[in-house]
Structures are given as structure tokens and as C-alpha cells.
Image (cartoon, rainbow, N blue to C red):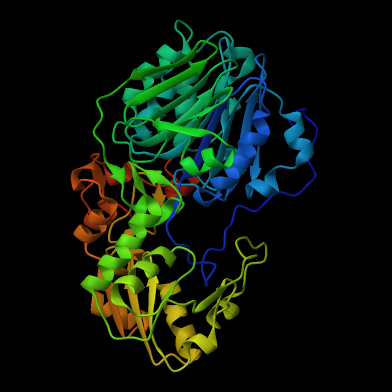
Length: 511
């Protein structure tokens, strides 16, 4: 619906993203990108829109913006990319001084409109909108807490429990925060946040205040920025640069930030136990992001150099899988002395498709995203560098493509260790049964994808490249050592809150 209640006939996106040569074989997906701004006198909706553009890589299924003018909150959200969801007329109707924005990839709850964010909820003294990056692991407990909330008299008329019919952890948190009849939202947040387990970087707002919070482990990034006439928070500092905001600092693990007309204040709701996601450095974050003081592009180049040291091979050309493998390929070429070159051409207009290819076309190796540069490949021994291998289907197609282009040898090098375990903190990997490294050793994986050789960077090498202490990073997807204790496997799963899914799909991805 339009913010003014008029039906919208313009078609949005379909919530599907084609990321690989095989559209059915997606790589690891981050949960979301979040942004918040408190800036009276600024066009906060458009600033949020451009910030979400900078965070689009973190979520492509849906996008949404909530804006407050001091009296009411308007929320507009739909399935699709940021550019598909919003247009000039929509943004011009979102007028206010506070806004939050969100781009989503689902990790709890299906990819449907009702699970798009920001979520919205009336409260006893106004309303609340919230966006979430991460994934909570005690959703079953939170669901019970929501069900146990006392029924207020107002609910008989407003049906507050039915306003937001989402089936994700974010909707539960929104409901818990919205219930604060005897205290302020700020105090309610200090009560609720310690009860949440898992990864969360939240931005939320009521009519006059912007809030942001980060889990005690700081698994997902969140940064605070300053405008000439306001404040902003975002998943990555690239969003701040896009709108001309300066970086102040990262939001600390276990910190709640509150911004209103009285300025900024901070609360510590839990003791920090830093366990930042190492996969942010490998793949998730933009190359121009800085996390915990380390530039992501520099970390990826360093991973490539270490990869060349650990798995050298005689070859004629080092090529990346664009774009994710490019920095590591540069580092590999620098360290090995083997020339760097472009071996693949990327179709810049592929990213979303409304026409899903048939099984026959997939079996023929439909090349929606990449094509080999034959004149660069023919007659050469090729090293192809990528960030990770999940199922192996994409790498298999790439190797086949290079051989068809005339490569004499194809050596695959990966700038992260083998992914053997699922993530429960905000990355939607395949189930453990689908992870190729879970059932095969390195030589068997090389044979499976058709490579002459395969080399993964070591865990120590990857961590060293981040310049972070190993005990301040989460590397559970590589080691199976989860920093936050997981509940019973029956209480985990993307569709936990959807009875029809939960009954039909066994949870296969708990170690």
C-alpha cells in the first residue's frame, strides 16, 4: 500500500536474486543491511534511500523505509531491490525528521512481503518501527514471552497482536519492545535486549527518537556517524560515505544508543564479549568498508598473498571470479609473481531475473552472469581465485567454462577455509548436508569441480589477514565452534515460526 493508503499497482521485485551461473545455486547470503538517521531539516527519506543503495549487497529480497514527522510513523516496504521498491513519488511522500531503512535477505522467516522490514507496531503511546541485521537463536523463548504479554484493554479494539503478522524473530522483538505501558521505550529496551541471544544489529524508532543496539558479541557490524545537523547509524561505513556523513565510531558490542532532541546517550545493557564475524572480511562486507579498524579490501588482498604462500603452483595467469574474488586474486598475483588478468566477463545487468531457466537450460550451463574471455584463456595454465565454495556447483560450471575456452590447466584457490558448518548468526548458508566440504576432502572436492588442483587458505592465515585476535572473531562456519551456545536442533531453522513449513521440513542444519 501507498503510505497514504492508496493501492500501488506498480510491480515490485520478486524477491529472488540470481547470484551464480546456476540461478538455483546461491552462495552465502547475509541477513540484512540497516540504516537509521536523526536529522531535522534534512530529506531523511532520500538519504535513507541512497544509504540503502550502498548496503544493497547485504540483502536483495526486500527493502523498506519508515519515517516519522514527530506525530506519526509511515512505513513503505515491498519485495525487490531498493531501486524497484522506491520511486520519486513514493520518497516525496515520506516526509519527516527521523527515518530507518532496511534491505533484507531472509534467515528466519520466508521471503514474503509480511516478513519485509521495517516491522511496525502500535504502542500504548504511539508506534514503533524496527529493522534487524542478524539472527536470533532463542526465537522459541521470545515467542513464548510475546504470547505471555498481558492483554491491554486497547487490544480489544486495535487487535495489536495481529497488526504485524510476520513469521520472523524481528517481529517478536518488535512486539516485546512495543509493550511498555508503565515505562519508557528506552527503559523497556534495556529490559528486553539482555534477553535476546544470537546476532543482532538493530535500528528502531518511535515518533521522536532513534535507537540502535548491537549484541554483546558484536557479530554483525554497526557504525555510528555524524552529519552537520544530525546522526546516523548503518551496517557499514560505506553507507555513511555515500550520504556525506563522517564516521564517529563503531557501536560497541552490548551497547544501546539513543538519539533525540537532547542529543546522543549510550547505555551498556550487557558486558561485551567480542566475536565479530570473520566472513565479513572474506565476502559479506563491501571492499571499502572498515571493520574493527581493518580495511576489508586490504584484508582480502592479504588473504590472497597468504594463499599464494600456502598453495603455490606453476601457472601463466591469475584470474578472479568477479567481483568477490578480485582483491584476493590481486594479492595472489603480487605474491606469486604470476600475471593478473581478467578471464571472465561479467554481465553487469544480471542480478535479478523474473524468468527462471528450465532444468534443460541449467543442464546446458546457462551463462547468465559470466562468460570466459577466450583470447585470455586459450593455451594457458590458469589460477582462478574465489572467496568460498559452498555446494560446488558454481565452481564446477566455472572450471568447465575455462576448459571450453581452451585452458590447459585450471587451478582453483579459495581465500577462506572449507565451509563445513551452517551459520546461525545471520548468514544463510546451505544446510550442512549440502555443504560440499562436509562430506569430501580437498582432493575429492577438486575432482568434483573438475580442477587440476584446489587450495584453501588456512584458518590461521585467514585470521591473520584480518589483523584481529582469533578470540575476538567468530569462525564457526569453518570450525563448528559456536561462540553462543545453540539450543536443541528442533528449535533452530529458518522457518521455525511458520507451522506449515516447520511441519514439512526437518531441520537438517544443526551440527
